[in-house]
Image (cartoon, rainbow, N blue to C red; front, side, top):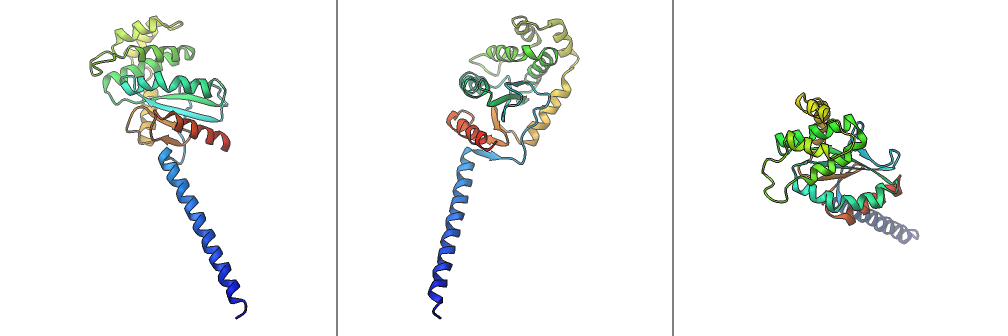
Length: 223
């Protein structure tokens, strides 16, 4: 019986340690849930428009829509800081995946952007930016993405063959790329635009740059 008190102490100690471990795990899971949702894998960016060093250890993907006012706002507020802090420094590569939540205009804008990318990847991001710039600040539901507007934007960007672009739009030449994007939208259950994923983590609030930085920095540590 002399050993009984010691055994009790050991058992209590083990229970306390186990409780601490459980609390730490629960706290980490809780913290992670506040940051976003983790998936089993991350969106494939093979063949997607991508900005930055191809060997960058962290991938940031925007699921976006040219008709989406919040996407335009994200592109004007969060995106430049992200590029400055992480893309230009070689830590992150950034990719854009089309979402067709606004019907035919979303499809038309996406077809045009993918056609530009297929024609000249170097011109894609300038076209991408200029098309978003044409989005009206008011009356977002008005029809503004038209072939005429797309060609007007394309003429303002260097090294785009507008005749080929017009032909590609008319023949839906980039439809395979759009379908591939839609498959990714469905796979990752994208419900809102913009949706931001950092590797396999879908961010809860795409406009919370501090959280975006926190997740990127954690992913950089882990890679």
